[in-house]
Image 1: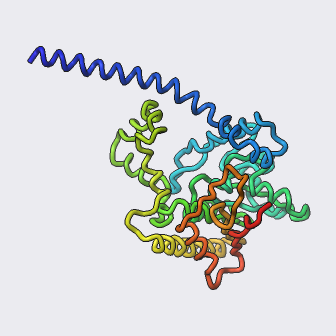
Image 2 (image 1 turned 90 degrees about the vertical axis):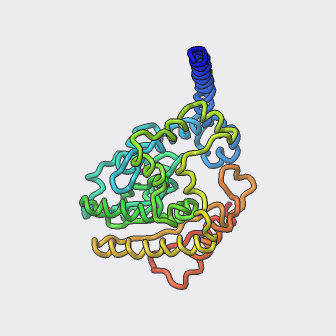
Image 3 (image 1 turned 120 degrees about the horizontal axis):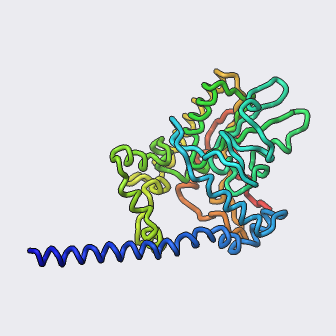
Length: 341
């Protein structure tokens, strides 16, 4: 027994040493690989990116992409699960909401003063403006292009992963805290569609992760997936992704038509509920169904956008377009990329 124990101990010890050495080697490989990710993306897609950022050098675009990464290092937000961290940089500045046109703004400026048209924009990462500078987000563009006599001030409350239901919860929180804009614009469509399990179940994107972490004081799965050795072998598809990525997949065992109809029904119900909030608090609201490159868009020299056709995405967008009656403050922009120059 002593001999067997001694042999087993030596084998276990050697396995542990080998794993530690392998993880150290993986660390040496993973960190430089991740550090150079922005540069590789820019080099691979430079012709398209150069047209998208005509006034940027290659190094500027790399710096912008690298600065965008911390935006997705999310922090906890009561009722809403997550939000972007507050950060200050050359291109990206957030503190409760994102700056527009690079100008410094604080919460006091977000309050109506009777002299300006205060507009809140709510949506997902496309509203937030992931991978673009403060002055190039959609809200910043609206502020810049609005007639001067409007005295419009845009406040960007876009958040990664948010879909329509979370936007309404965020809007409610803002109203409860005394923030009451003149106008609120809700940009929807992408996350309601490409996160089908979330919008089908009406659950925020990170629900599976948080459920697991509440059940156990130590999230062993997350700890193991965070090991650099596991990250390295994940590149070859030999290790699983985090469970939250399952929310990008269709709900198991549910027909595409059923999921699409339920997602649309949930969105329309949420639109009605949000409208009641707007009416109660005297806020003019605009609902925008945004274009996506998977629908009515074909651009051969666009190497960045996901243009893969999807039966499910097409079904959701088709059902929105086919709605017999929508309120006057609903703007369907799903065809905006058709023949886009």
